[in-house]
Image (cartoon, rainbow, N blue to C red):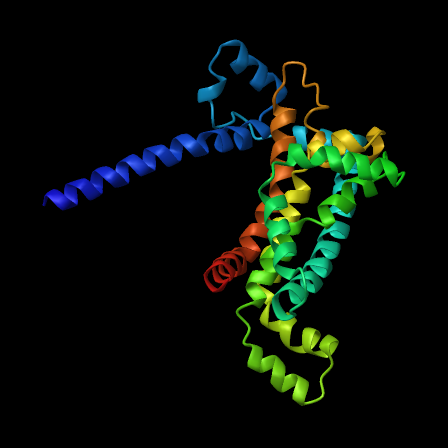
Length: 278
């Protein structure tokens, strides 16, 4: 009986805690569907935080963003382009690098892997300075490639795929070699299909990272026309109407939410499997 009471109390506590944590999300979604006048009235009466159900559902905030605010669509397509290029490049580099580090023995391999780990645990703010120096020396400062290349060569992807590939039996590769398969054929026909879970996990994590980039575009880009969508919220001047900010936040969140829901099983399986086997 005492155990059941504890379980009930624990459940109630977790429900209350979950509601508190999810409240900002509910408020953001609700406010994005409110009329401007309704938001202003409730904000002036200091009751806006407790007003979660709109009096009248309106899409006016989304209409402003999608049809009357050209900066939003420009930054949206900038983000899509950066994300696609970075994700494809990250996957190719990580698969080739992970294959080399996990299945080949060469001088300095352990040192290289240890260097990857050291770079991974460094805060982004520490690596921004050497990135800026290299980008400036390559005359890429102000170009979108100044943002794309550093993220594309992120060492986390190589480390993740290498840990995942370590679980593939070496005997399988020896059989393929005896059958006359080249290293490229072994990679494309055996390694990559068996590493699908890790590749999907890397793809989702890379997309999330690209979608949320803030520091790199602010530092490496000169012109606002090249900015990604993550910087759009800093540009909004709602003039007392927070509904536009909430609508932009909802639109910014939706693509990542759909990607996560669609690939959540592969993402969780890929990360957990690579950690256990690695």
